[in-house]
Image (cartoon, rainbow, N blue to C red; front, side):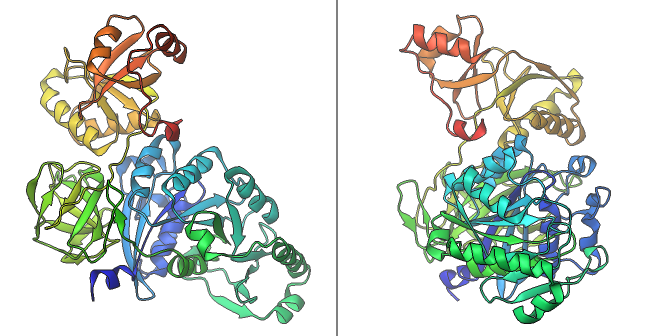
Length: 528
């Protein structure tokens, strides 16, 4: 088949949510339904202790904290399609990593907790999806537990994000008394049966409405009234509006017990778009059948500590990827050999021989490749870069043992390239005492943990008084360095950042010296 025909069989989507909404559990259950987990594997994510064996949460610190702090790529087959599932961190402090992953996705599934609804981080991630123009499906999870009213939840989604929920399935039974769902497309009632620890697919029984009315009694009557109301207000699925990001098809279920998981996974196949031609920096679409091209959206070192390797995740945008092909690295113009190319399944990986648009390929030991870089064969192309968020937290890092400075410098450079933190350097100090800049303080925790455990360089962090950063230039930097409450540091890409101790002081400098360049960073509106 041609690359375009292979692309039509791909579904590449991200799962995003607030922490504890059940995203990691849903990810595991998708793998169960896709046949990628054997036997009782999915039951491992039931409790926090069990999350130590969750496929997507492979990093040691994730297993200790019981939360996702790094994104993961998982590929599995389902219904004759190849599904590329991009798991993301849920915590606000790692929203920049989520943004990078969304750049590689064609759609997203937002997971909401039935008892909590829209939480601040959920709202932020919705906004990121909307900024990227991603079609969005919503899964209201944990319906097997006490929670809020279904109509109240979908009203909140529309009110807070301005996107109309169009329920595809509707629950029968209030939250905590979950009987099953009505598939609004067919009108059938899909009754679920519990399975031990959710370790196998939940048996489903399709029941016609007349029989359901008799057997489910008052629970069916309430659901029937709510369905009539949804029909009256026109909350019906519209494919064109979905692809335009105006409506979000909504599903109810319980990932823990597998209720509604298959219906949601089917919707990913049936509703989510397959890969389409990517726009380059000039806004020109790169045809799917054009020669091989792709962009790097993530870099990760030390997936396997015993090998100390470095993987660049390439989203294939056009053509057929064949292992061993020598492509051009767009940023440097140098040839890049793809001899060591893997498909990645959480922490596990195996050699990949070919891939197509929508697939994600792990390029091993891609030492010169950075996030946002484009790779291509024959026909040059440059895809839009991935912006950094505006940091809000700053700390000076120093190695505890000067004899480990070489390891410290190597680790700092690696974390910078991965985007774990931004590393800012003073021209007079270099790597002796770099400033680590982060969107959230938990990024510092990850950086310290990895420097010590992966690079053998224990560090101490000293907080600073800086709270806001602005992009500047060399002439302005000369004037700014002479002011109190301001410092000017340099990122690895050469960007100069002016750090201020308070927004008030920034405003005062802008008022007093309007000729100085003090520009908001790209992506700043998404970080705050």
